[in-house]
Every structure is written in structure tokens, then in C-alpha cells.
Length: 223
Image 1 (tube, rainbow, N blue to C red):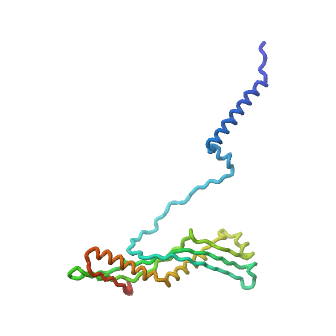
Image 2 (tube, rainbow, N blue to C red):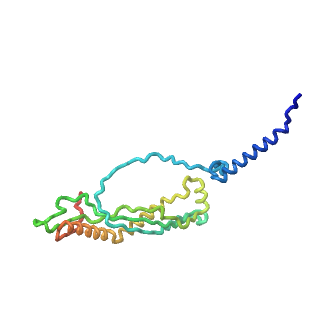
Image 3 (cartoon, rainbow, N blue to C red):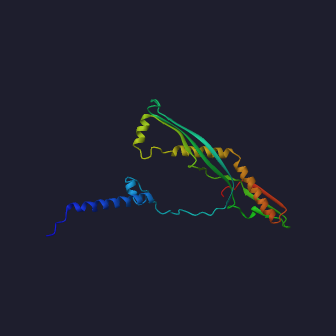
């Protein structure tokens, strides 16, 4: 009669299987550590971009010559106080450094037939252009930043219940307004006209015109 298999005979096989499994896992971890991402970071987050398609809203033909651009920096100091409460209870103050730019351009799109006059001998040419204008200011949000934000107790509690407690749209608008005012007080428009004149003179002289005249005048009303 043959002897029944012993239960104890399975122990060496189980031990060997576990040893092999440990070795395989160890080699995988040392080789790349990419085979078990969930084991290394079981609570890691995954970023997904669910942005919809970009919609083209409009297309405009550009007929302006951007002749100059100025860069500006302003420190916005926005303070809000409650009338009968101390600042520690209700009130806020934000210091914000705004960096932006303003372009100045000459519009060629509205020129009429009399804007360019060539002499009979084709040696002289005169060009009449409208004065340079300022484009809308552009705030560089990547280079703009808040320096300090001070808020009273009630304001901090209110921020806790809002969807966007760090909303900086108000200081953005103030920065854009001050940059626009600084651009109007600068010589940016004069610089744009000088650069436009230099560009046209160089181009027209290359066309063999000996006498080139570029002037600027106010646009007629109604245009």
C-alpha cells in the first residue's frame, strides 16, 4: 500500500513560489519603477484636459502699421474701509504690481485717393496720413503679481464662502486704466509717427523718389 502524500510537502513549493514572486517584483521596481504606479502612489491624481473646441468668433483684415510699443509698470494700491468698523474687523488692502504694454499704430485702411500724390516727373511724392493712435492696453498677467493682501476678519470669513476668494479682476482693471493713462501722457504716438515716417521714406526712396514728404493730419469728421 502506497503512503498518502504529506501535507508538509507543499510547504517547500509555496516558499519557492513566494521567493520567485518577490524577486520578480524587486527586479521590476529596480528596473523602471513604472510597472507599479498605483502601488507607489495609490492616492495620486490624474490630470485630464476636457477643454472644448476653440470657436472662431471673427476675422478682421488688419490695415494698420504698428510703429511703436511701450511697456509700463504700475503698483496698484487698492484699499477698502468700512465706515464704522476697524480695519482688523472689516476692510481690505491689496498691493498689486501690474506689468503691461501699449502699442501705437497708424491706420492705413481709411486712406483716400488723395492721400498719396506723385509729381508729374515722378521724382517727388507726398503722403498724408492720420495721426497715430494708441491700441488698447495689454496686461501681462504672467509678469503681474500681488505683493500683499490684507483682509479684515469679516472679509476672510466671506472669502471662505465664495467661489473665487482670490479674485483680482478689480486690481487688473485699475492696472490697465493707469497704464492707459501713462501711455497717453507719454510720447508714444509721436514715436510711432516718426517710425512710420522713417519707414515710408526708406521704402519710397528705394523706388527712386528723390523728394519724399510725409505729413499727418486729423481725420475728417464722419470717417
